[in-house]
Amino acid sequence: MSLEGPGTASSLSGHTGEAVGNLSHHLRALAAAGLIEEAPELARDRRERWWRRTTPTLRWSSADFTGDAAGETIARALESLNLERQTGHVRRWADQPQEEQERWPLGPFSTEGWLRVTDEELADFAAELQTVIDRWAGRELPDDGRERGTVFTFARAVPGRP
Image (cartoon, rainbow, N blue to C red; front, side, top):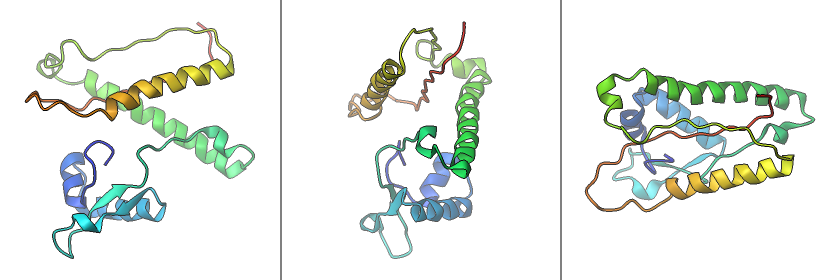
C-alpha cells in the first residue's frame, strides 16, 4: 500500500505472492490496530473491500518502549526481525541471476562510513537521510514512458568501533 496505493486482498496478492485469504486476515488485523482503513468509495460493488494506509509512514523507536519490560522485549524482537527483513532484500538481490543484475548496471549500491557525532548530530543525520528517501519515494513520477522498477533502500547507523 505504501508503494502502489490502496488495494484489495486480491490486488495485494498479485503484488506479494501471498494467498488472498492470508492477506484478508492480515488486513483485518492491521485495520484493528489502526494502521489501515477501509476505502469503500473505491469499491465497484458491496463485495469488494479496498484498504488504504491511515498514515503515509510508520516509524517507531525502541526508545518508545523504555520503562515497559514487555514493550522493551517486543521492541528488541521487532528490531531483530526488521534487520533480518532488510538484509534479506539485499541477499535476494545478490542471489539474482547475472542477466537480472545486468538490467541495473548503474543503480544498486552499497555505502558505508564512520562518523564522529553526538547523539543529537546522529539524529540530525538520520533526519537528513529520511528527507532524501521521502523526497524520492513521494515524487511525482514523470510520464516519459520509461519503466520504473521498485527498489528497496535502507540505512542504519549504530555506535561501534572500526
